[in-house]
Length: 200
Image (cartoon, one colour):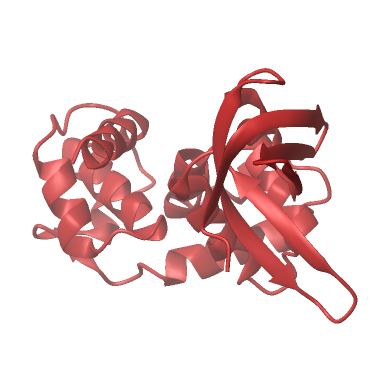
């Protein structure tokens, strides 16, 4: 129903921002990452939105870019991860961190978020990894990113897997990573690939 809101920041408090659009103020629940990206009160801002429809409420969620919105949708699709838990994760981790941690099988990273226990963190990693399990990127199998230690192929595979976790197609992810120096750490490859997508 709502794709995005563009207006002025009317109010902000932890976990919530109000965007005034032509005199109508929309209250959006949001992550701390989104709040850090938004301008001060009174300045213009755009948030990408997700409308949650329940029997007793309509809740609007706002995100500073489409990547965080897509990551939020992936998280709430996981059994046991509700809107509050998803926002807690995105308050502690960027979408890139979520994708990379899932691709690396790092469940412990998710437990830093408020309310995320070990079992739920393991489920998050398992379900996000399942979305890309068995895929190969430009001839690089996911198993190349072995836990024994980083390698150029492993970094590229891990970065490509993380990009797919964020919603890009395997071919898009492979092409984006192939243009970069595979000797770079996986985190840097993801960030540079995302910048490349943003400039297209």
